[in-house]
Image 1 (tube, rainbow, N blue to C red):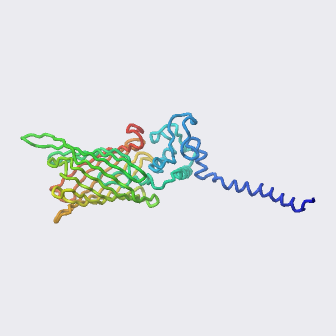
Image 2: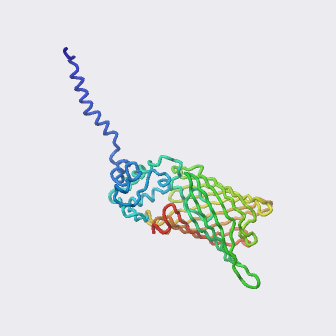
Image 3: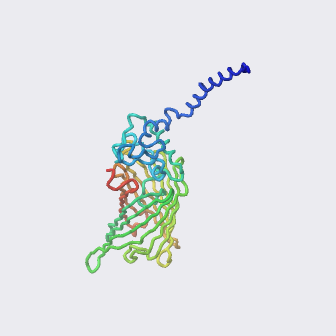
Length: 375
């Protein structure tokens, strides 16, 4: 049987289509050479894996753990600025292994930013607030970001008889938006009894608290949380280290990133005693304003802040107390997970009965490694 004369033409058209059209389609499926995905594949995937989960140690030939970029619990916590510093200068810049090389000469800042944007895509759960929203911790105002921290806070009153009060604050994050808190206060008070001066020590009212992020947006630079704390009547009321009753303190906390490294934090809440005969109900409001200043482009961070504090007992003819708290926080080590903050709580009214209190805390973000690491 004779073949139709048009079959060779159809066959030739199919060959041309396969040779020209299909390769072009295949090429279009590949990422552009300067995209974050392409740059990551060239510079990072050999150690961190194509999917960001990290290449096993037996294949890499060294035992230093490689981070899992797809683990939102890890990847969401750090700001791009910290990752940028490690990528540009190398692992030792933040107290990590020298096996993490420096890419500052091989890649431009814009290329590294595109890589970081691509790395962020490995975390698929958007419920985790980004590390940029983790603003510096003020001395008094509760911040909205959930944390894994251990804080030793101390206040000293040197006017009249000396009083030293301290708190050990343990914070444990759970889930994407939640935090548990345990506060153990204690202190010393100077007494002038029997014609002499002696010091007594006491335990304060132990606190148990929870906090939950209800809204966060990196694009708007905003984070909002609600929380509450129960203060148990474990302190000595007569010595001034307790209220004499269990107190519940609900609150709302808000943080806002502002231009040029500035930030603001706000908190409003109330103190609701179980026994009204022992303590009065109280409302409080707090605001903190500050700026993050880096040595160089990525180095040690200094954060000057000022807090405005207001409180009022919810009884007739009660006074509203106002305080101002100038302070300075500084990161102490290269990893920046150990920080020190010092300031003074200065009364703005009723200065005859209320005195200046000097305050300081030492903070360890234990999720980022041991206290002795990264110096």
